[in-house]
Image 1 (tube, rainbow, N blue to C red):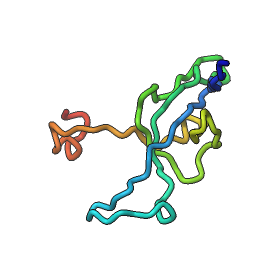
Image 2 (image 1 turned 180 degrees about the vertical axis):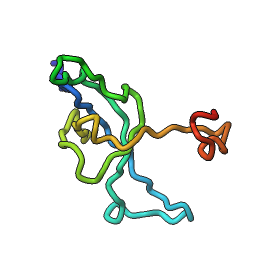
Image 3 (image 1 turned 30 degrees about the horizontal axis):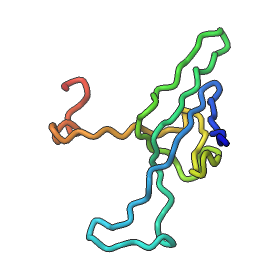
Image 4 (image 1 turned 90 degrees about the vertical axis):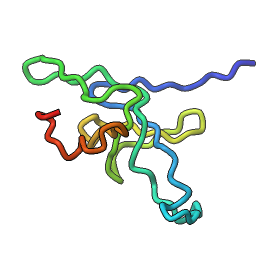
Length: 116
């Protein structure tokens, strides 16, 4: 017998985010027990809604895309369980930023974007 899997298609400017796993070890190498770990404030965007129309009827698309690693606040979004894993549905405007890995140019962050 087949088991059906649930999917959620976000509406308007909402996004579906899967939290990333909390760090189990501190920077100093000490293991952190589950009870002391903080809820992660980062996640991976799984689905993105089509966008939201303004008063004139122009469609404003979210500034994130599937696969982006994003930062958000503690009390952001609504938690849902999909296939046994916790996910969050939130407005794209609640995302504080997209995490970008850049090992090649470590001084890039100090440079204004106009000079890159």
